Image (cartoon, rainbow, N blue to C red; front, side, top):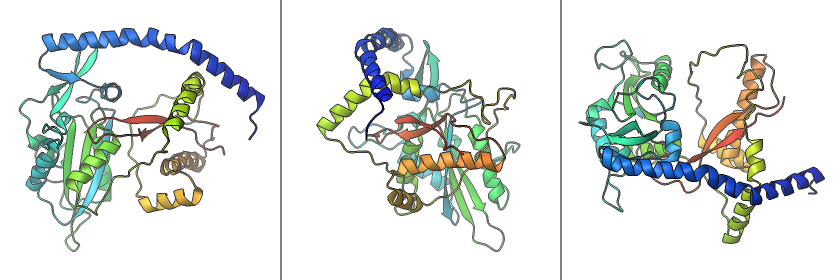
Length: 362
């Protein structure tokens, strides 16, 4: 396919900027920050020996949150279990298979972050060990905000109750100086006196310690029986050494142009960014159950990736929502869609990148 002349000129200009300006500019910007970071880490070892380690860059972006007051970065997932499930059994499983699980290669804790919380010191976030960790404070029955005891939610929680639970968990604060995660047991969900009961196990974790892919892997490998559930495993393009070298070289050359084109246009008004209306900031959960085999079949028939199908679904969903509510569909809306980064480690951390999603035109 023949590229237009404007694209060729833009490509050459980007290459020139990358090779001449980009490297020294990045050194000028990042070296002082790196030196400052290393200085703070060294001082913390002497002045604050109670701090375990500094929070990684990707984790810090999401961990910089008032998790004990008004958290904005909570992940909630749930799993349905037929029959009754004992809270003490659940606590024993979580304690043995997640909290105290050992790393086979080193013999140390595999997920030490689940006994730690975030502390700000020297302008950076650090991890600190939770004092007197008690599993009962992290694995518990569901209770409404106005409940004073720890009794289960009603005799027979229904779908509306489960929606309320998810909505509350998204914004409910974590305990102060406690590791920001909870696993909630909801018993007798959807049941009445004549039907078989079932339970829901809901996991609520702060995004600063774990991304969605890590949480699903930990959840399914530790709490779900084989065959009952499995986290999606993303597939990435396999490249040879030469192909990787060429790909990275091209990415470096086009970096200024790519970064510039990805800058959100905050000044553009759209139905999700009205300039004359003050938004309340209240969030509402929304979900739908879509079988993995359906997404895979769409991917196979359309010749696209699994992630591509999800991106198209998100864009189409936004467009359909606007049309059904008789709202104008703008040419583009800046939406951040996080996706797993290649080589995701089997640990509790954020290992993802953000993809800019643009809904299709009307």
